[in-house]
Length: 283
Image (tube, rainbow, N blue to C red; front, side, top):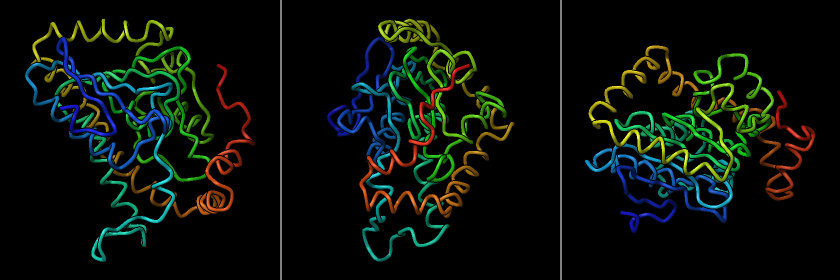
């Protein structure tokens, strides 16, 4: 199965499918191809009777630095004249929802998914991690959505359900970040451990899940997620995509794109984030 993928790796052993984001040279930035390959791998694992759970991780020094801005900030490639570009707000919302359908496999699949987070889990990385059923992170990991400062709102939105309204607003109104220990203390992650123990901690949990009948794992995951749906979680995800399309009309978004074109991405990010200084929240 792994031979079919270019942007992720896929293996199965001891009752778990291990899926790793595999663009370390890009800090595992999420491309359209990665989203499609990840969705395919998740449903493949869900259909594999050997698999009791999925472990989602990232190769290299980061879990995921976000979306690949090289493709999202440039003109949309339409393929043919009859394919959508980004001419209207509805075109934008349509593309955001198409990407969201890929991510929602994490929420919709029957088997539980553990996010194994190390290094930075930023922007699109949080869109993936927070749709997983359980998040275990390293103490030095970092969670945040800096693009909320200039580029739009969040196209997925599980923050409210993990953190409650005040902490969700604290992070999203500023784009500031939480370290691993605080993420666990506030409910964004289940547990935070030293980096050298991260794999061991995730495997210990996966070992326990392997002892449980997959049908019962499915029952218990799905009833909790149905409860979230009754609290509006699925509707909120769709609203988040539409709100992000609205956010893309903000003046700051156009200024950021102009800075990318004029100065390059690295300088545009410095101009966006520099005024915030060290944005790691100290509780």
